[in-house]
Image (tube, rainbow, N blue to C red; front, side, top):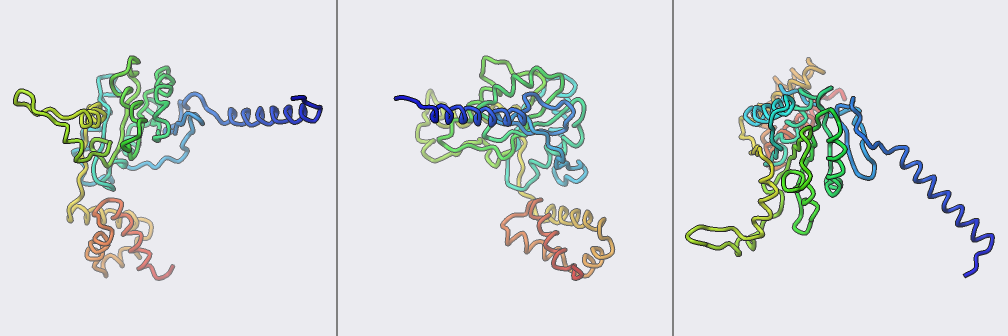
Length: 296
């Protein structure tokens, strides 16, 4: 095939265009974390991105999660003091405070000595690269993976599994993983998995499928369970949310609270949503105020 002058010009133009695209991509690519940032996101294709306005939560706003908070708080203090600490899996029902507790830990302990890096499932395959970068930093980091779960045919969890335990690369002392999930074992389970179980010398041995699914969650040294709130706990959270809004519109909110049966309405709202969770409590208060504030 012969190239004329027009072909050569087109190829040169294409190469120049690709070079410009690559240059622009690299301009926004941060290879190392910002040592001053409280929270950042990381993805292998974009590098580190500073979260300028992280969603921080004061520890005092966490209701009926004292036991879980105490355990993860102690684990974080051990980590910051250079003592052995565990990776943490927070599992349980949706809207029960799993992510909120992690954000509260950042609120209390984040700063010069500790930063948090949010990691989505898309970056798990390159997790080894991230760990090598962070291992060379003086600062300590918590990797936050929210809503972590995998489908049956998803092999990306193996990168996380190797990091937590089982890789030739020793995990650095300045990195911990705090992950939240609605699933205790992170992978879907089925009745079919139980059919391969065997009894050997009087002991029940689980099948390979179950062993594989349990092995990932077992690599988290600290499990924190989050169960749904009961009715009284849910109403406590609603009351606290009302008080938060009352600080902004005290006279109007106080009048509405005193003249309406907000407890009955809050329970009805929860039944319609099918959940008594902290998230539903917050949604109810916003809905309730919007309905009652007639001057808007």
